[in-house]
Length: 486
Ligand SMILES: *[C@@H]1O[C@H](CO)[C@@H](O)[C@H](O)[C@H]1NC(C)=O
Ligand SMILES: *[C@@H]1O[C@H](CO)[C@@H](O)[C@H](O)[C@H]1NC(C)=O
Ligand SMILES: *[C@@H]1O[C@H](CO)[C@@H](O)[C@H](O)[C@H]1NC(C)=O
Ligand SMILES: *[C@@H]1O[C@H](CO)[C@@H](O)[C@H](O)[C@H]1NC(C)=O
Ligand SMILES: *[C@@H]1O[C@H](CO)[C@@H](O)[C@H](O)[C@H]1NC(C)=O
Ligand SMILES: *[C@@H]1O[C@H](CO)[C@@H](O)[C@H](O)[C@H]1NC(C)=O
Ligand SMILES: *[C@@H]1O[C@H](CO)[C@@H](O)[C@H](O)[C@H]1NC(C)=O
Ligand SMILES: *[C@@H]1O[C@H](CO)[C@@H](O)[C@H](O)[C@H]1NC(C)=O
Ligand SMILES: *[C@@H]1O[C@H](CO)[C@@H](O)[C@H](O)[C@H]1NC(C)=O
Ligand SMILES: *[C@@H]1O[C@H](CO)[C@@H](O)[C@H](O)[C@H]1NC(C)=O
Picture 1 (cartoon, rainbow, N blue to C red):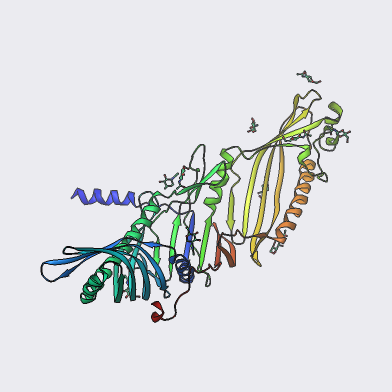
Picture 2 (picture 1 turned 45 degrees about the horizontal axis):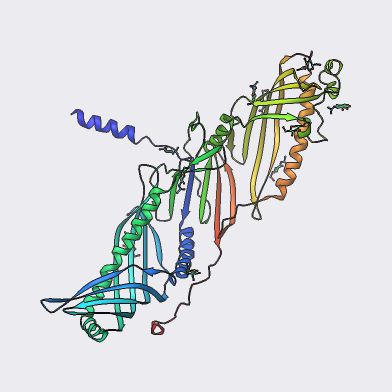
């Protein structure tokens, strides 16, 4: 009676789902485009590969067999028809098939029959080859994508072989006479090779890293949070999407929240980035102290209204120019909390809370503490894609200063805040000029994004796009008709 209860409890705790920080969706349009580009790429490299060693046995009569081996087999010509690939919800994976493939091969043969042994070279043609392979996509215990073969079927309509060298005429005659056995051997050899390639891919995926260094400070964990979700029109993968400090490896003190990706138009794929992912990066930088900023006057634009020189501080700290005249000042601005970002429809908001400690630099280099302030600021921004460029604008919503302590008499925080805010707005005007010209979307080595849309939603940013792959040079010509093979 107790056992089912315990089992339920265990299952219940194990199935506590981890919300993804990043979600990637590939739609059927993307799958079909990817397949087309992939087929072109495969056609391009086919001319340059050596096929695996093939061997077989043909039973000749009741007691004797012909044993043969093909080595150094190359593809001479290949008529690669457009393959078909579709999402297969039943198999939780992909259903791939190719039909009507014809291929001309050339290589070396070695054969033995009774006391006769011989070697030579061969030409072989396979006509109307059909192969269907169904693979399952899954997540392994370490969060890797995992791929396994569910089923494979192969059919070869016809085989022609022509041997030369040695006692080729004997073996040629035997192979022709037992062609159906020979064809069966070839057919039986296809699926084990397909399954071996899938196993190789799986091995490659298992040893792949799921986290990557982004810079000297941060790495990102892209492990899968669940098995890919496959339905007839799309594949959806949730990734952890957590940035963490390479040094401390600490998880952020907040969790990914669930979100629902809106359905949007006819795009090849979409990438959704949650607040959690962005804030984990900000948390990583914050814990590494990257939001503790040292500022001196040479870092401030010349036309900024406030300057770090004791002589120009009169309007804000009346006693300062009297006490210390003409000294350079430094400011140590330290964030007091993670500058978290929130996404709301069409807007991103960020708040920044910090302490600012001011020092005067004495002629002998000694830093004399002057005063300490608390600075609270809030920014909001918008971002969109226009003509293939990321554009946007940022504005300051709030900027307040509060005095913590002063060694140089009263500080007029209101006027200091007003001037500083004007300076910040001046800098943002320049930033916005650059943002209105736009930034290029990242380019990949062999592809670019087209028809892209960026949308800020409640809790996440979504990027919908099509891709365009540069055409590759084909390795060799595709014959139009199978009679061109010989
Ligand atoms: C795979 O596709 C083929 C042809 O499109 C179909 O006959 C077969 O039932 C499919 N199998 C699965 C598991 O989806
Ligand atoms: C995986 O990450 C480790 C540590 O960062 C690195 O040494 C290794 O080269 C990476 N492996 C691959 C295949 O990128
Ligand atoms: C990435 O996240 C997964 C799931 O939370 C975890 O099991 C794995 O240890 C993490 N990897 C790294 C390098 O932090
Ligand atoms: C300001 O700081 C930078 C970097 O720390 C330094 O190179 C520069 O000389 C400093 N400028 C002044 C005027 O102290
Ligand atoms: C500070 O400002 C005064 C007056 O503008 C100037 O004479 C002085 O050279 C400045 N000091 C430094 C260190 O830049
Ligand atoms: C601000 O940060 C700097 C550099 O990390 C550190 O040396 C300093 O003690 C911090 N000041 C305050 C008030 O936290
Ligand atoms: C540097 O100059 C200041 C002010 O003139 C003085 O108070 C301080 O003792 C000096 N420091 C050193 C190390 O000479
Ligand atoms: C930012 O861009 C949006 C959309 O073009 C526009 O409506 C808004 O006025 C802009 N805000 C600023 C401060 O320029
Ligand atoms: C601006 O700051 C004040 C004082 O800190 C706060 O009361 C107000 O809510 C803030 N407004 C925004 C939009 O952040
Ligand atoms: C075939 O491979 C060789 C050596 O790896 C390389 O130099 C050549 O460019 C390749 N040819 C094609 C068509 O890929």
